[in-house]
Picture 1 (cartoon, rainbow, N blue to C red):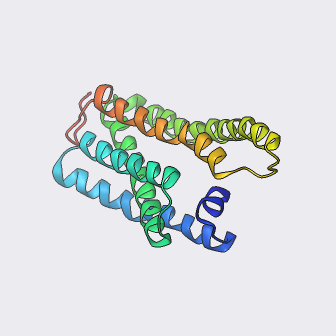
Picture 2 (spheres, rainbow, N blue to C red):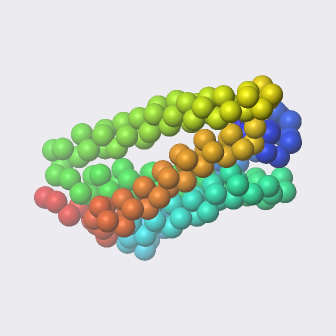
Length: 180
């Protein structure tokens, strides 16, 4: 939220309202992507497409100053891109034997929370390193550039890792259990 306030010169209330677009994207995207995956019979494709959309949206949010309406749309797509996470639970079940499926889903859930627990301090550390440079430049707040470095070094890389994982490490199940 502070990044949006700095980048787009908007109030705290407006930035908070913009962040709601992420959650609306998740709320719309999760059931839609799940339904579409079941309908088409593919899981990997519907993990990949949202990740690519999320990567593009995140790059635009971080590095391009856009009109507030466009920002809302981009944040919606960031949330929509997170909807692929719902499919990862189905893939965890379909790629594992029944007696370990719950454990696999638990590891999947843990990875989701662990990524947040690791990324937030990492972004903070990068911001602090950037701020030391900014303090030398007589600035006491994080600059847009500081945020761009911190967020640009973490979030797009997470999307790229996700895309690589989908392309090379996740087995397509065609919406059926592949292990008995």
